[in-house]
Amino acid sequence: MKTLLITAFVLLFGISNAQNDFNMKLNAGIITEKLIETKKFYTKVLDFGISFENEFYILLHTPNKASEISFLLPNHPSQKPIFQSEFLGNGVYLTIEVDNVDEVYKKLKDKGVKMEVEIRDEEWGDRHFAIKDPNGIGIDIVTYTKPKE
Image 1 (cartoon, one colour):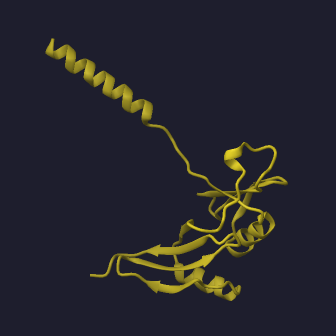
Image 2 (tube, helix red, strand yellow):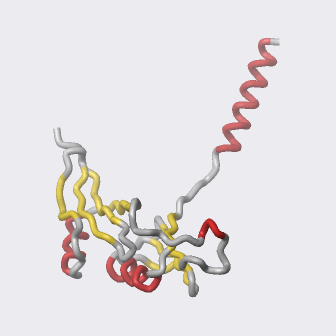
Image 3 (cartoon, one colour):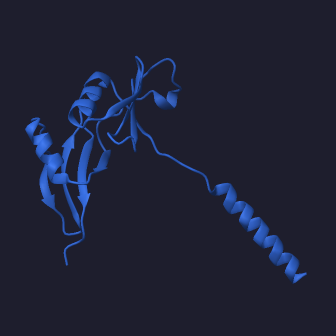
């Protein structure tokens, strides 16, 4: 009986874990009236590409196509109420991890991008700076380094 219970437990536990072991990808979405300004910012300033676009929605990808972010016009008749309300510009930030933050910082400074946080080293190990997109979203651009000892 003990062997039967252990076997049943192992089979159930194994099946349970298999059912929860699936591929997942996160795509953040922001609802905004500023679709044109947002597209220009992400494509011209950050060199994102366009994965998909129509008159009320745009899906953008990072230059290496590893991540995506979407923007949607508010109150569009094709969308359910949960996807209607416009983002109000507070409480959201994005982090973009790069190989060489100093290079990206110089490139954006040369483009005339306003810095919200100038480039700096943090004691916990980040070297980063921050900018804002047209929707008021803070964008922290970072290269992770070892914490100071």
